Image (cartoon, rainbow, N blue to C red; front, top):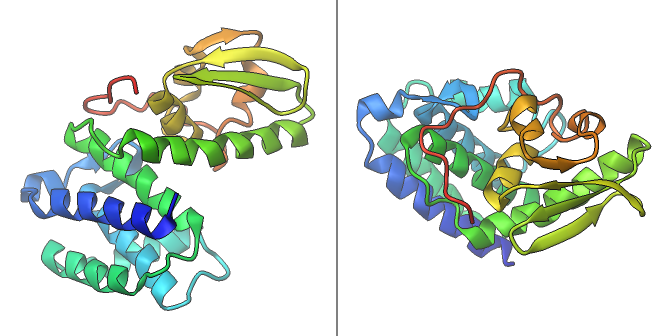
Length: 226
């Protein structure tokens, strides 16, 4: 898929949604990123776009300090100001140089959907695009951990990740797989997927960002199966 089109369509959906929110909604906590509000997630997304435009994707990218700086630098700005900065950045992002920037936007778009009680974004084709990378990445972690391969069944997808032959299977919806592989589900929630075999070794490597959350991630209105 075209990275620039994916990013611009995600930007359009998120910015239109955020622009229409009330102050209460902007201040709502985001279950997928529990340290941030809706406004702060938006500030982070703008900070990432600014970092790309200004060639600041260097050392420290993705660390809590790097992402936190995006929020702190825009703490005194209004949402219209933050969205205006984002529009200016997006106009300069042609082409979008990093697939990771697009994945970050789509994951956070889903975070906002979970916080705002909506279940329509990002769309299924974008979710599927993220899953292609996420499952390849999971396969690398499975290999590195010395585990047997795992067959993942999700929607029309039936894919062995890690080495053959597989040692087990797991089945869930594409949306659940998308959210959990980005660390937006607890270990207990992932354990409740349909497993054939012992899930415990795979739970240790499930989330590319570190251990899965201890507490269940209770989003306002879970998306329907895709």
